[in-house]
Amino acid sequence: MSDTQIKSVALFFFFAFFDELKALELTSRTVKLVRKHSRDGSLDTNALIVKFAQKVLEKESRKHDPAPPPQDLTIFQIPDTMHLGYLHALRKRATLEEFSSLVWTRVLGMTETTVALGLGATIGTVRHRTSNALKSLGRAIPPEASP
Image (cartoon, rainbow, N blue to C red; front, side, top):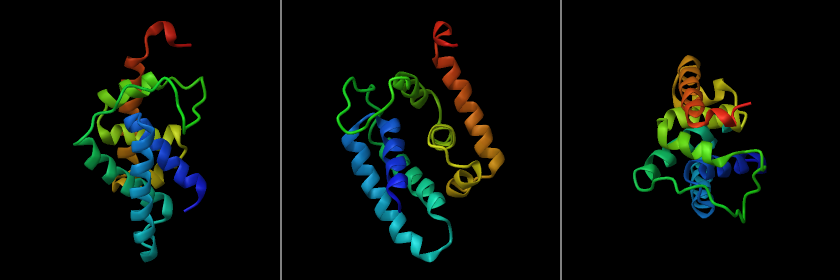
């Protein structure tokens, strides 16, 4: 796995829980799973990343709700233009699948095909989930904050 892929996994978990240390812990767990299963060649690395990150997210979500977005970040550097409060609202409103589809495709830039392979869904399902997440995100943004 490349550094860029590992950073994407860390950001995915940070956006899911808004906890830098938990994001690092879950990233480590996911990287181990991806490395272990990447030897069989059944899926490409990015699809494996999505697959195992989703499994770790589902398991961890049963134990922990996302914390409020932190005021000070020590590990991650997030642009000031990215409003974490909206992602926090989305995480609470959308299903895990919708949240994951949106973050992987729209925030972290993976293709819908890769996300579909990783989630074991069709491209149409990923598009539908992403669309639902975007609608939820739109409802979370107050009208005065929209361009």
